[in-house]
Length: 564
Image (cartoon, rainbow, N blue to C red; front, side, top):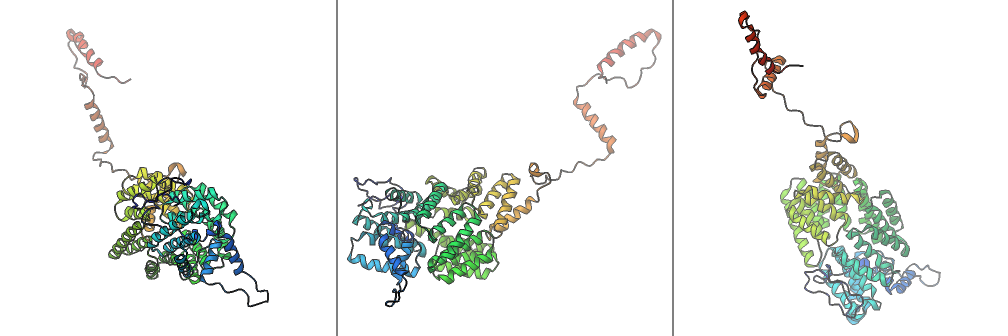
């Protein structure tokens, strides 16, 4: 059997690499917990590994023009549509994905050694798990991909199974393992475009902006069209280049043709609108995505977020509840819980937080690492020290994205370690990403450390970027700004808040003259005692004693301090 990077250290089923395999990788990662799977996005790119020719022929057939002879091209069915999406590197609709899974399941029952079909099925399981939040499919995916590699080793041309494993590792937030799988494939087949999307996700999760940029550029060179535009828009978004991200995302939406691909592009436009504080535009884009593809459930959660900003609370609650019903992701439970808490509905909030813990526990059993989300929850609603431990673990695993840096900085602040947290919060904002929460966290940490000028700037940045970035945190940002007040005149050299008024001076009871006398009296008491000089001239002495009197008066004058 072909070598696989060992998965989660807690896994009871570590991979068993062959000693002869030249691609044995270090034993670590989270891709080896109870069977995990690869993503459909990867499956959709398997064409680059041998199925390309068949996929291109299929895609060509789908766009064939009627030449007047016969009845024209046959209308593609759901399986053909899913395969065509795979060839293009685009997402398939959930219904088409379901049809593709059913088709491959039946095929491999009678053709158990068909490695490419097994790789396709395994990757489709990953995509289904990702888009339905049914983590049980990760186990099926891992098992199926292993069967594919048993039928044909990766170095013997089964690169699509390796890409599937990289996608699986990304889905389980094991970015280091995903990077190793992807780079193994890239080393063998540097022009295989299907490996670059999983590498982009892995590098992004590890916080390696330089590598993610290079992989995105290479992907654009090898695979033109909507998939490359979508990846480029995400790259610009992560670097804070809003105008470029928006222009590229719009081009992707304009050029998208298939419903699932179009819905994904419209959703991206909605996310960009939300992040720049335009909730009405965001709602319009999310609505358009749902009209285009009713199965694009992530747009329900995006729509709920934007409705909160518009103070359409009842609609927002309904949208969140619908999103959780159709796509039970723990991050949606956290957002809904915080909305309930902002409304004073603490009981409902606790219910959502309990649901979040249950979903995260279920994900862990399937090999998915939800440490980042759990840490965000613990920092604000639970145990900040526990949040710090979770995030330090992520940092040790080289998960050093802006999201992890921001969360670790905030958790340290909440745990009473603001000075240490400052470094991480600055690193998150320093990536360039325009995220109101990151700016808010940095500003609050700086305020705690009495660095008032930068604190004011970052809090203003948070509120200006997205005035309603959080139903709980946005009001706190405004309160903190109000407490800091307006910057005093004098420019950057005088950016501290106004000093507190001086303490009232003791009331003077006897006027300034009395005060001076009191000061002189204090002075006298603190000086060493000297022989007292007579307060008035001595009475005239008889002539016989004048000399003696003068002699006794001389020492007294000399002993007294003379004024110059």
